[in-house]
Image 1: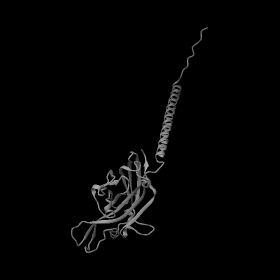
Image 2: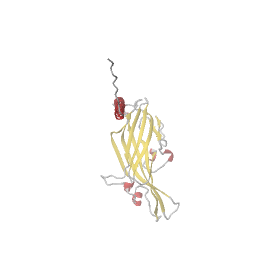
Image 3: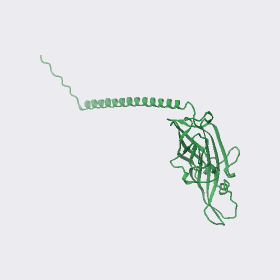
Image 4: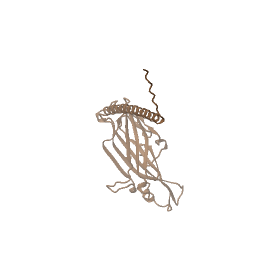
Length: 280
């Protein structure tokens, strides 16, 4: 007896359902593959991060370099735009001289580990108010707390210091390898007030913060947070980085003194105030 062949007729609606199921299965497979890849990738990234963090922690078990003291001196200055009186036509500038003292554990003895081979300042940024145009300069310590500007010492993308062991020339961007002189810089906010007219040319002008009070420049318009990065290497070519943030001092809320009184001085001092972290 012959068996009859069974013919299954699949209509268009069934074919559509089968195709949709196959597409869904393919999509799920793709999602599964992507999730597996992402899981493996995240695992290895976390593992590498953990190893990197552990390595950096080991490198920074002991502190070799730190900034333990920052001295700040803020005042103002003006330039006269006219050659003769009876009027004053002034452009007013505010400046803050900065001295950063690096502690390299000098008392424990000088060696290749705590002696500087190179030092660079970079990534200079200003978060400031509305008034003026800010810049940062290297400052000759011989002119500290006096308004002097040398455009050749203006810090652009970076400033490389000349590291010496003797015969320091402070007129250039130089630093002793044993850190026995501070890094001296000058923050200058130029043209806070432009073309300020004083009609009485016989008036006695004090070229300090009193000019800011005279011109009625509000302190809020001059507020600024200066930031930059210091990168140094020691004689072993170990690389260290410190990120410096400085609020430009314009007033002292405790004493009531302000730059309007002529000048304002501030000292920040603490062990490991700013720590250099070894990265290589």
